[in-house]
Amino acid sequence: MGLRINDTIPDLTVETDHGTISLHDWIGDSWAVLFSHPKDFTPVCTTEFGAVAQLADEWEKRGTKVLGISIDSAEEHKKWKTDIESVAGTNAGFPIVADENLEMAKAFDMLPAEAYMPDGRTPADSATVRSVFIVGPDKQLKLSMTYPMTVGRNFAEVLRALDGLQTSAGQGVATPANWNIGDDVIIPTSVSDEDAKAKYGDFTTVLPYLRTTKL
Image (tube, rainbow, N blue to C red; front, side):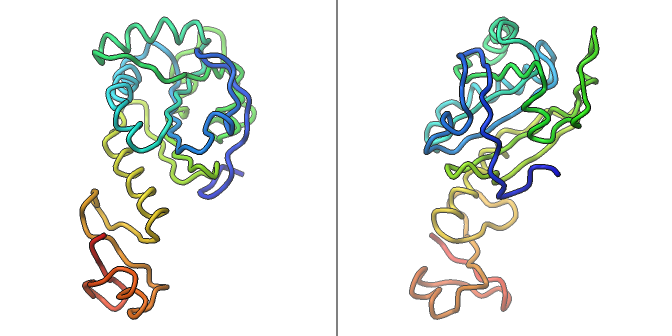
């Protein structure tokens, strides 16, 4: 059974280039973005790690920690970060899990239980380890996405989704397609018009089941 939305993530103890961490303790009261990669020193992944590093201030503004995952060693991660920082033009201060035994990849259902890494492996041997997980302070999975080897992830979209999740959790609303901070939000159908007026003030009824408002 795979890890599903609202499941509590496994509380694994993992090795990183910053030392040993327990996932639940490391997340603490923060939100967290976990993003995984099949191998160090690969081109698409290097640009992605760089993009995450460049967004350090944005993660901090949102009370969010970021954690990379790759199935090479912590020492390899430290060497790879030199390339990442060169491409990004900034410090890559987040930890990267050294998932050499595939424990985290399997626990998060990124690889099948029977998977193993052959000698002389290539990124294709662990291609499915290219996922993004957003986890709430309650340690529950809020969102996941998986990308193919050839398409770099859009971390502006990860930020947008994180904003939507945090707005929904904090304000009790939903967000429409292509929503960004400042746009109208959707009032849940479980809220009556009377209660919506009391809670949100003016709102627009687009359809009987689609009401929007400003926060």
